[in-house]
Length: 362
Image: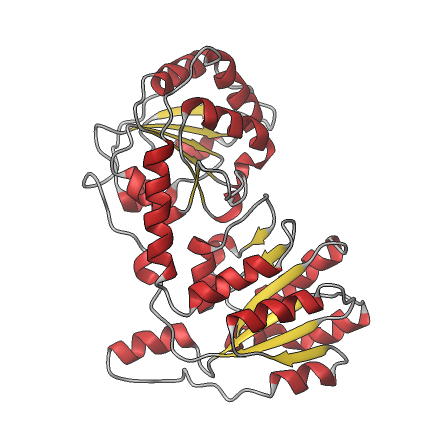
């Protein structure tokens, strides 16, 4: 394949016919859809299709848009969807974990043909996402789907209520969003607040929510945030960490001070590898999960950075706002205890079929 491979017009014709005939379409976007952001928004409104984004696709559609859906909302909608349009995404979790059946038609747009040659059964559009979406828009120019506003608002409200019960994570996630400017960059981590952000942090624009993707790399976050700040010095960058993960690269505070990188590092300190500790406790034992931590405020100040300790979500939001104008790093320690288990909202059960179809329809 080549980077500028153009979509097959005959495949686009079939895809447009599927979408025009759909009653409950669903659009799933990944990082490969970022370049087609504006066109995707128009197409979603034309089709009245909810847009589910995950990982690198977060922010392709502003989370405040009524068609924007979180992953748990997408899971609810997947069960009754009749046509799924997947743009720039491996579609791994929905396709493999949520399930498929003969009633579900799947259209995938990807520039890499090899991603669609291993077990994908559906309609494959190989080519640039922008060119493919433009082609679908042209073919659907005279089509307008009826509004699904009431239905989708009810789904969003139900999922938001469910997330709000995740305590204390939901309060801290809301504080992060309230304190960060719309174009602020949040760098997540493998920590309890990070897991909650995957499903409950509203992302308003692409590339403002940075994750380790499929790597699951504990401890990457603070160093990655320094890179983001070096590249985007005029934008706010917040790194969220657990105590264990932060200590992987905390000594890079020296680099941040030296180069005046005003990253805001929030350290949620439970003196443990909390996620593993929860699993161990459920099985009646504890092994190598307790941590002996420094005084994180004093630690930050020893490098010449700012250090502060807060103990509520409201105080965290205020501390982040205070730190936004600094050209030196800030470490905000938040002492926490045990938190609600987020995984029932992250690892969602199969809702249809017994597995993936094996037939590959081109």
